[in-house]
Length: 520
Ligand code: HEM
Ligand SMILES: N[C@@H](CC(=O)c1ccccc1NC=O)C(=O)O
Image (cartoon, rainbow, N blue to C red; front, top):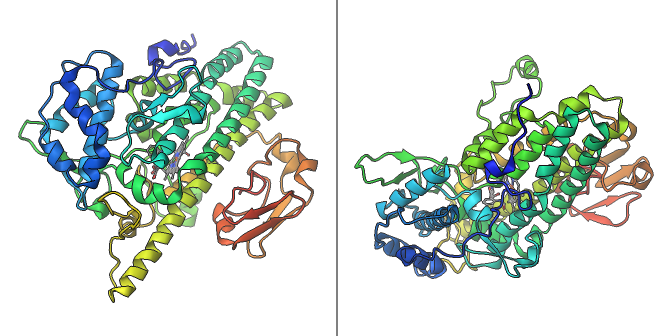
């Protein structure tokens, strides 16, 4: 007997809104009892800029969670306490390693209820933190969305969260679509599986375009210097002043340091859903596909921990259980592998992988611009400031345009670690590149056999020379990631200000995403 297919209702998933709540998030807790939390959150920016945040939080009464009624109220309370506790920890020059019990006791209870860790997570920052300005316009229209709570009050921060909200909304219909494909594969209905996969590929390509809209209203400077410090967790944060993590006072008198990853989109169930649906598997960072090759090269054994899987414990309980259920029924990859002679099916499947890989490429480009380049810039600023002050130590950079009291610079933090890390604590570039590369591993190759090695790219000479023009190769948007000799995204970044393509319309800026034409 095959296990039953998941019933979305049982997992708090809406066929229209996916992992976003079926009902719109609450804009406030209506019970006046919770007014003290609402007031702090309404005044977060002022309390941060006048450095009164800790004074105000210390003065809060210890409120009971006994008056929270609906799930929507529990979620709102989780968001409020997440924003308040991270403001408390990161809102002044020195990080606080203790969150007072009037906040941490209810936060621990609420987190337990929602089966989430007591820290800012993607659920609190994005999934439950939006409001459509016009209730009749769909949630996947970015212009129609507003964030309910932000640390900085900036458009950039709201946009940063809202791009993810729109992606969740636009990606939502793929959930019933994939369940339909799984059911069809069980019935050996090849036409339906193929149709579902083609529609899935198109939808993922749409999401890539939405991701690319990050640039419109969130600048790399605002993100890196002002927003990102507040998204941090308490794990591996010694460089930022939390060598042991944080103590969440629980009233028991027992004090222990805890460490949690910060908010990260790796905690999005949607993207993990895509991987599971397509049978994409991720290994711990640094682990090769063939573990024997590591041994042969005599390299050290890679770390065992698998970040992407670990991030499931940062998802709301029902969503995490949905993914676990899906793993037991996912059959698309094995169905395609059992039918590789079916070209249309194999092609549609490969298109899905390419679209997802291209999504991850776009994401890599964003991470380069929003974190890698910004950290370099900030290190330059720090070095200049140190030289002017006649000092050789690298100080924490003051960010002149910041309207917050805060001037903790992620670069100073990063400098103390071995390489750049994500808010989730990953070695971000190796991790993200591996994740992108793993996305293409299950490809049948039906498509790439006809197009591989058609392009070559020379980073040193800054030229891209397609053997034939993309249009001759394929009418589709994108040539996929296996088709050219570009070694790495970094080559594009490092190759100077202008990279020109032969046979392509227009020029590319260094660091630009080459639209699938030339990624490794
Ligand atoms: C300025 C915008 C963004 C930056 C700087 C950024 C940065 C990062 C970083 C550093 C990681 C590594 C994990 C960690 O340690 O946290 C990550 C992971 C991830 N991000 Fe983003 N991110 C951004 C926006 C987005 C958006 C809008 C999405 C939408 C879906 C997204 C999807 C993901 C996913 C799925 C992962 C997990 C890795 C994977 O599955 O390949 N990111 N991001
Ligand atoms: N991991 C990212 C942060 C990140 O991706 C993120 C954090 C909180 C909420 C959403 C996020 N991603 C996209 O909107 C970083 O290291 O900056």
